[in-house]
Image 1 (cartoon, rainbow, N blue to C red):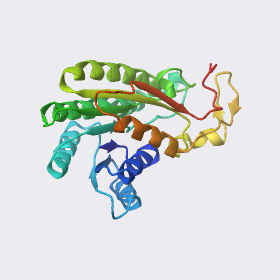
Image 2: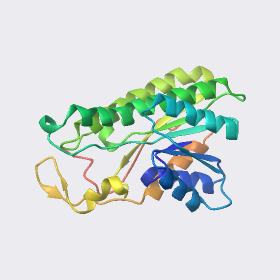
Image 3: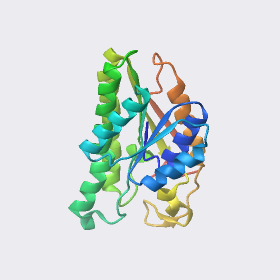
Image 4: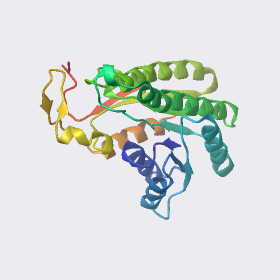
Length: 243
């Protein structure tokens, strides 16, 4: 299962998994975008599209019910859905915008992880894998990113708790921290984005397919092995030494 599968990293990962022979459930808010991802996977792929708002507990329950009805089990969750929010100074960020980012990035990730955990614990054979999409921002912030950065730091705590709580049930959990994959969300990188010193600078990006190959590697491991944390980033981006 891939959340946020209608575009960007989610789409790239979904297509890579499908090409590798996985049966893939595509979740996201926009039905048309999910259908486009399914079409790109090709006629030979086994995909299920389920329009879902991950911040809505009822939507998440319906998503997992649909997946179990179609495929019988859940072996992998790529917890990817996320939003950045408006890049405004902290004092100008409305509570509504703060809450919107937290609802998707953190509450949505929790709801999906909880539902996956329940399914993986109960199914036979037992177990499965959860891969959380963290971010470079799980380590260091950008200016004007307090909501996004706070949720991505929280994602690391979610990953560690899932790893610990999943041990008795053969549930593995890892996190991939991504820097500057070329997606709609990172379009500003290529035109100039605010740096910690107040300057604007163009930043290099990498192909989202490079991220997808890493997720595929993590997903294909036996449950006895786990990539706990992986960082995949554009080589020359300002991460080491950032800030």
